[in-house]
Image (cartoon, rainbow, N blue to C red):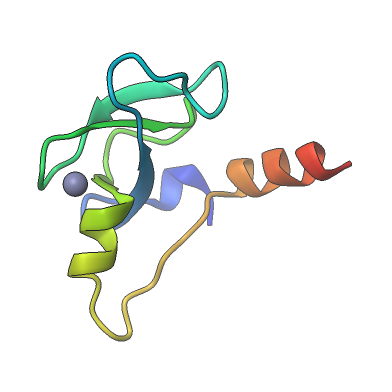
Length: 83
Ligand SMILES: [Zn+2]
């Protein structure tokens, strides 16, 4: 899924990044979980539109049949990290 295809009805699962901890990748950007308002981190190419949730809220609120998407950019980054 391209980043541009994501809308506010989609959500992105984000890693928490409490103050004082290092981000998982140095260029990650920070935001706030839409449900619990904890500090989260995500890749800079994730668009503003989709709802961003920390992984705990995402797991607690997912329903059967809901889709979880990785953007093409994130998949490419993961592939590069493995090579
Ligand atoms: Zn949360």
